[in-house]
Length: 507
Ligand code: AMP
Ligand code: MG
Image 1: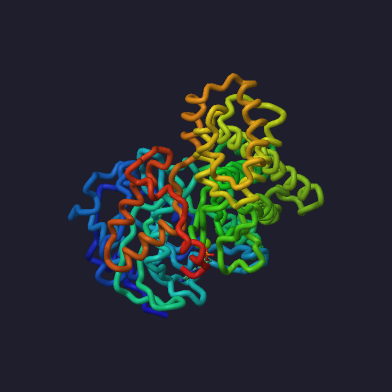
Image 2: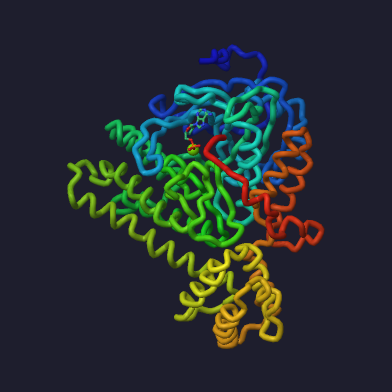
């Protein structure tokens, strides 16, 4: 194991930007983490930054260059920020449906929590070196996966989908061994909390009910205060998490996002998209699409995500049973209470997805026939693996007089026409005005998503030392619903080589 750096108070080299540190996780006590500094990457350089995120934190526009911030050195792990209390949290989880024991934080470091105009936010470095939870890993992240996480976090945020965010990436020449030798990078991530289902599973599995309770009380007080005045605050917490998860997964399905590794340690307690690994946006619509090359069983296929999220909620429910029992022995009644608490996931997911799909179809009202119409459209897309993003976007331009923009996407014109008749009747029934409908639809059907090949282009350029493409793509993805005609190529069909891109867990 690489030697750890000296404790913070022995380092003279401290930067002191005017941040107000709250560090409430650190107050939980040593059962929940290990305090340790980052291990620096040598000769760091900037790869990418989200100035938009920095601004939303209330940071000055020149934060990255200010001598008093020393941001490059801080992100590289070479210099701490005064007031930070870097720590690796401990969590466990189920991977691919199997209990995997202790998993993290193997390569992430919570620097602390700061006060911002958006409320308290935690700052985390990912790829900042080994921790006591690194297992066989090296504590590092490669440039390739760091750019993927950076771009997708910001893309998801601008799509309006709950997510952890990424402030910046720094790169280094430090070699990192994956399938081949690559170079290291560090991402700074930002979220109100990085708590995962796996944090709770950890203390439940190790039969530490007091710590479990401390963590749950912390989560309730900080993130789910509405649960306090309920008959069973822990069941209420579970239900609230189930509801947020339902919204999150409906959002993913609606935009064609596959997470790729929905293990319970990658499920956010706040219902955020977290841990961008082998994720992918659907190109051609294939419900069975598996974006993670290492997922041989297709456990995390696009169409399975809603069911997997429910499975994961069961794991969280299991972990919370001792708390839900409220001082009594866990009994059948406790189990029933827990199951009842996650039940709203099903209806919440179904209702949210229906409403997203209705909006995507441009409907302003609700009709009993909508589910069949939605299914009919998705069947059309699936039959020919029609491009998901392009098809939805073009549907906005559909009119009875000229359906060609969308109709031309299908080889089976008769199948499209049969569906379009029903669509037209439905639109007429609500006296829909084409131009207004198109405008509504273009606000919910993105023109730009982070397709694999776009990301790959940015990565290849960055690996050659050119970070301009990453910056350009970030800007495009910050306005996913705008036409941006000058970037039309980014909204086009993927090139043939995109089909051969393979994304694995290796990151
Ligand atoms: P993931 O499925 O990518 O979220 O990874 C599962 C766990 O493995 C995470 O909790 C990380 O802490 C840990 N991990 C992944 N990659 C590394 C690495 N290179 N070094 C240390 N730990 C790692
Ligand atoms: Mg993870």
